Amino acid sequence: MKANNRVYQDHKATIINWYLNDQAKNINDNSTRKMNYDIGESL
Image (cartoon, rainbow, N blue to C red; front, top):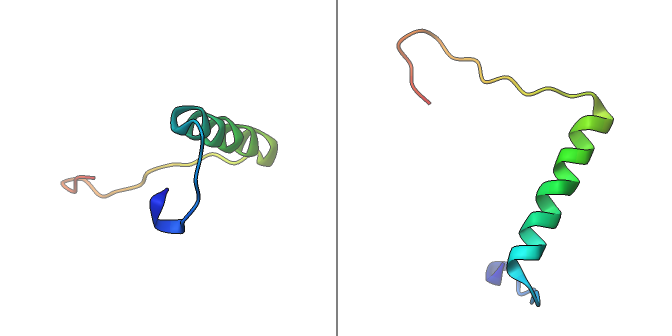
């Protein structure tokens, strides 16, 4: 957060808000994320 020179009063609340907004976007977009990888590869 410091990297973009923004100041947030409550860092925890800001991060939770970002998370909830991302979740809402995923639901509204009907998007599902899948992690695809070949056998033997690790993430």
